[in-house]
Amino acid sequence: MAAAWNVIKAWLVTVAVAGLLGLLGYVIGEVRLASIFAFAGLLLCLSLYWAADRAIMGMLGARELPEGENADLHAVVAGLAARAQVVKPRLYVIERGPPLSLAAGRGVWSSTIAFTMGLLALPPAEVEGVLAHELAHIRNRDIVIQTPVVLFAAALLELSRIGGFLERALLYVLGPLAAACEHVLLSPKREFLADRRAAEICESPHGLADALIRLEQAVELVEFQASPACEPLFTVNPLDEEGLPGMFVTHPAVAERVDRLRALDPGWREKIRAA
Image (cartoon, rainbow, N blue to C red; front, top):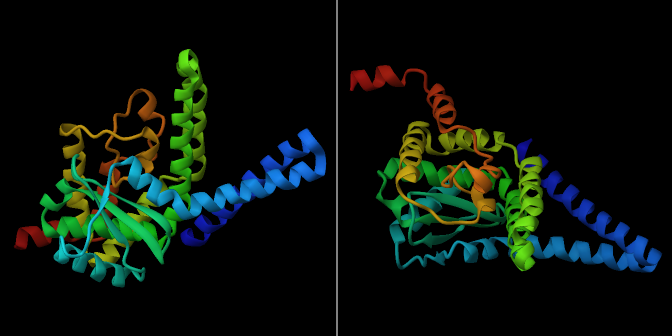
């Protein structure tokens, strides 16, 4: 159901963009210009659909990880992707930053997972849990809507830079507009659904639960630089929750996510005591 709703939202956004541009064209030049503007809107949405993931990788300074550089990790991702019933995604590396990952792309057949080098320092079960979480976003088609929405919001923020001495005033207008786009289209519930599916993929909720705790602690200690609009893509929020970045926070509290994951295995405390 979540996957179907994400596809529907993507189509609704496409129709809305084409319709609004068509309306603008009609106001300026009636039917002929309206059709040109509407067609331009469709081309814009199609371009975002095909190129948004590569644009985001460029924004984050990520580089593609060839199989020969880390064959073991590629094998792990391939195994998890088979369990998640998606085509193995391309892997990208972000050289600096706390342990983090994100997913982007066009759907289950064409996707990308990027991660910081710090993620690979986590225990194997936690790495698998985080990667399974990103694969769950791919399986649920979250990336179909969140990838172009994040790129559009980031473009709005960058647009304020052309204002010169009006830059701050433009940011006051475009910042809330970009944040509103993300909040309207990206529900925090997607993280709970991805967590649950990741637990199913890994056959245990505890690797991801432990990783979420570790990731939250790491982002408080290690600075991470990125556009605030990219916040919805990451496993946890790596940015400040004050000022402009705070407007883009779409992640639920890590404590609540961990509690929900632990609840999938109610007897986990007894198992630890028995061990």
